[in-house]
Image (cartoon, chains in turn cyan, red):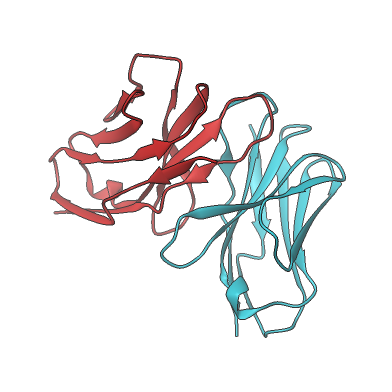
Length: 112
Length: 116
């Protein structure tokens, strides 16, 4: 069966520091991968998605970036965090051509 | 672009009651999927139920069922015999089924509280 992992689970970072969040999927190959952000009191907003290694599409312009160095690895990064980057970050996957996305456990990011 | 609206920020019912959560959406597409996800206090997003827009029959999963009204662009979730474990945020979501890698568009959620 497929599983999705995210780490770290919780992160507290100062403004202006760099960020790296990691997501990995097991038990499948060539999945579509997604990064979402959930700000306090809001629904989820799609940030990035990827259909393959090195292929990244951005939905929202911001100071975040994403990379997919391996088939089942998806990384969310920032060079300098802003206060507004605080939130709950969720990674998701789905099989190409399938209709359902499955979510990881998420990372709670607090920028102080 | 599509939008998803959940007009009930919070609902509270007694255990064993039936509750209906509302969702409306706006899209110019004809082929799409609709979903309800549950987010308990652990914040893990869990798929509750999905509906293909081309299917007229409403989806059902045990105590969970939907009322899908395509012309009205309405997609409500009914929870029967509610249980304490149903307490969670519930999100309605839309996905275009054009064959690409489209992500989900979410509503802002409804906080459902099941009272003992």
